[in-house]
Length: 370
Image (cartoon, rainbow, N blue to C red; front, top):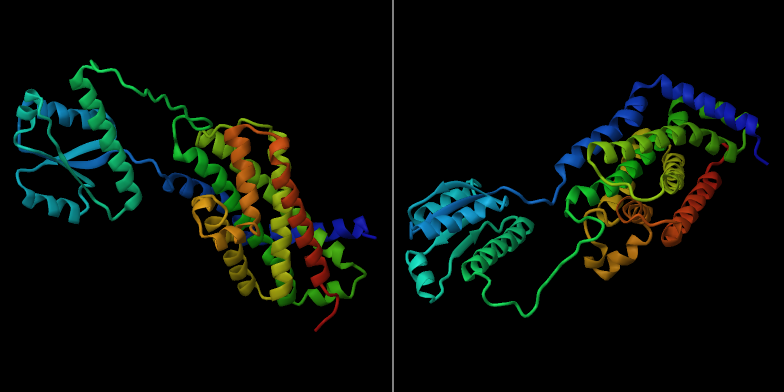
């Protein structure tokens, strides 16, 4: 039976240690905000203002109008006009341009005659993602220009009317920020508690705790309480930053969001405690927490890379990553506006993970000096 008086006494002791440790306070309150701001602005898949060089061999009013279509689209920014193919390589090699549009000398003549023509688009493929997006943008601009020239006299047999749900403006920040909150919190909570038990061993205060009647479950719970409060404050701050600073919509229940965040925090903090118990060394515990929390959360949670595109072996491994379920919950609550009915499986798996890790931490903590 757990004694609440002893548990809260340990929680007060841990809180005093946190207040006296500037590093822990900075880690607890400043690091999540800094990471969210830095990664929130740095990570983006939106491709705009592609630096574009134009090689217009036709130099007609129609060719200039064609170039204007690219500039007016908002996807391309003309940085230079060149007079020969010899000038293409320097712009691409020095990364001064991503796209080179080459207009043939008989461009307007062939269009006016109805014979049809072709243009050449040279794209820097060193960044495959940007290159594929640029290729799609070019196709859109050329398609619009061709349709306008035809005067839409020939009706289309198939009229496509796409509708994008949940993120109609296709802003990458809207799906990055919810996943980023999960990744940051996974790292922060594991780091915070990974130093607790190992710090007691290094400072020599663990012997005093072992000599008291405090039970392992009371020690683990007492250590968790202050960090859970700190982690919850960080989570609320991250949610506010996501909605107010980055304009990410919050379409579902805030209560469900806080509940799922609490479950995820409890599991992450318990995992940090387990690392701290197993290592007994602050440096080793910190390194183990970063490797075992950040890398899986960043690479295997579906935050950046689609799980369905991964090899089958990695897809199977992702089921062991709690951040996978929390990322899914956050995107569902923020973007899709879905509730408990659709997220109960993820919530159940997160709860099972949290309970299991807490149980392992309590069992691993032995009240004896080895």
